[in-house]
Length: 248
Ligand SMILES: Nc1ncnc2c1ncn2[C@@H]1O[C@H](COP(=O)(O)OP(=O)(O)OP(=O)(O)O)[C@@H](O)[C@H]1O
Ligand SMILES: Cc1ncsc1CCO
Ligand SMILES: [Mg+2]
Image (spheres, helix red, strand yellow):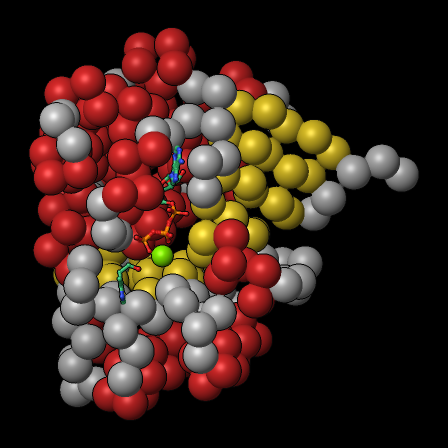
């Protein structure tokens, strides 16, 4: 695997998402539902957001991929997440976990660990969240975001240096990154390549968006515009990717 492979994967995933419009079910927090849904739509995917326990299994059965985001976890969402994961497992569907704020609550960290035991394809979090999670089973791709995004799986590490500091000033860019990641996993069987490609895509989109914004308030909408306009040329020109393999 080379950086050029990741750029090629990102371009291919982008056109497949636009052609196939994969359904991405987001069992997510109440803070970023709109931003996440808008970002997925801008990308070309088809989001759905219900967390109702009576319906979540039906939604999972009719979507291509699911992301579970623990941002505003409450007893109802916890129960719905369990039902959703059980259905995803029954159907052999892949899903992504975003363990938001698991570093701030023992209860949430314990629940995140329960979900990890149920086998998400990818876990994405910021530095503090991934530090609380610590090691993951070998079968799960680990994505730690920040000024640089680090994607780890099976002794290989991919570092994506794209992105813009304004991303840290808009709530929910990480949650949206988790959603974008899920859309890429929906169209690319290799979850590590999909994850690296997705982080490159949102990072390059952010770099293209920044010159069109005056600060955090205008950066959010500019990021949506840039996700919709993103193309293979921009990925090729701006991607900054490094790959390393563990020795031995
Ligand atoms: N200083 C930075 N420079 C460049 N990109 C950044 C920077 N900080 C964050 N990002 C990018 O912003 C996105 C969100 O990452 P971050 O780690 O801030 O998520 P988060 O803390 O989970 O965010 P949130 O909880 O608000 O959704 C990622 O795509 C990451 O690459
Ligand atoms: C700020 C915040 N609080 C719960 S969820 C959320 C959105 C980003 O993580
Ligand atoms: Mg987050």
